[in-house]
Image 1 (cartoon, rainbow, N blue to C red):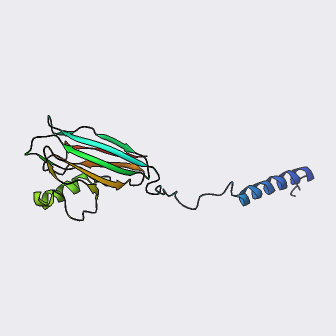
Image 2 (image 1 turned 60 degrees about the horizontal axis):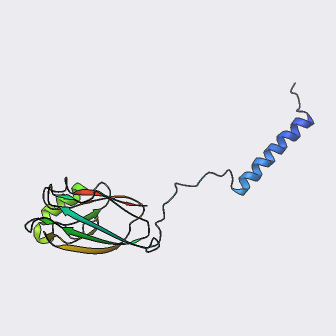
Length: 168
């Protein structure tokens, strides 16, 4: 024979169930319907940001390996090649995990193309290929928050002249 719950137990269970239904109806206990999506801030909402980076003649490196900018910013970047006139360098911002693909495509494209494949889908933005003593300035909207590699696509230099731009 099954025993019926007491009136007190019944009311406690009923109250607990009603409370859970109320919380669920308000969305407090609802599970997310899918993964959260990152929406990049509107262009220009992070203000104007000016970045400068140089090549360092000794060791053929960039003057810094870390750059930062807020999400939504309008970035003005000036790259100056401080090396001797015969050394050709550029500054290329690429999608994550694409340095080798971009460098290989650039090598195939050759010096006449600035060591960049036209329309390369992994390139976000790039300066011109410039010789020592020159500089180039580019203006672009910050990509979505994340960490983006940059490099020069001059042959053999992508392993040495590289860094990261962090968009917060």
